[in-house]
Length: 411
Image 1: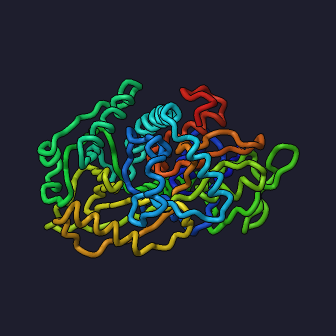
Image 2: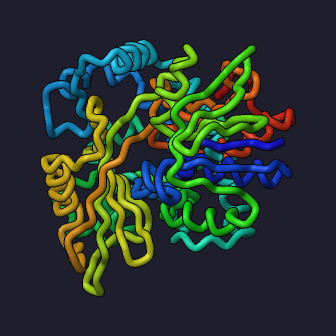
Image 3: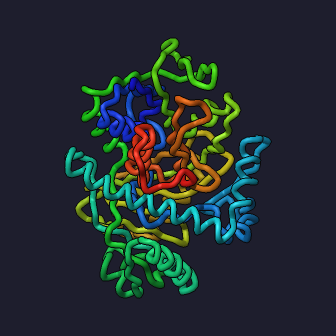
């Protein structure tokens, strides 16, 4: 088939890869002038296959007043006169139940572990230069209560196919990651998963483009304005480059999917959750972590990318701009200085803000849309990088009519 993929971020590019591998003629449309320019540009860089618990979980209900009132909260919710935000928020709150959280956790875990196998296969076959590293992930907890709760969650996942983990004392955490010795924050203990990866998602996008550009047609600076439909199917795309026709249409353009699809009375409930990152270039004197580290108390993640350190954190609900919020950036910098006071970077960090395309359940839509030749690969939230290969392969399988390990009710 002649298939178009809307979006050239991490999801769109991996989707194009697996569709082209199936022998389809593939075109990718991207509104920017190159690949990976939006959410994929400077994300947290962690491929966290075992850390997929949805944001909507029971403890959220007690935290909500804090999120609404404290501008220093890791997740800050600003209420807007926006019907999309209200629909998203109400649905989100309705999902904050234990059995619902567990259901989505297990589906996401299964997809993430599939994604890991595909990432390793892809890295071996394509030899992508994207600072890919398999040194594991260490989660740091500031008290016994939070550590025990997290260990129970991971044990639940182990019984359903998740990886085994190590529970570490403070001393064992410092031995595993000496950069933490000088930390000014409380290190009570930690959990270590040895099979977690990290990589630079923007470099990954650039490398994928180099592998695809001779077999896939890319149209940059091309904004998709409307899906033209008739008799239950898409007949064409209305774009800034004119009207374009294909056999099948894949929407994989992150937060842009909401307005594109809503015109057809199909509400995917994709809402932008703003996040921030800092990228430090390290010096010879830097005391920086070698494995991925997560500061659970402040919800900040650290990922080593060669001679750089990517730091990411914050969730701002109700701010759909890509502008840097100086207060949030400065707060993130202070947390870095406290967690790794001897980082000694060679220069000030490069600051970035991006919009995560999130659904209330944290579970993406990877399926046929409301029209017969429309397919969706959207709504991955903070898990886009982690789930991209598994999502793309699943969508390619469904387009081809192949059996998969996922039921139609999953994704």
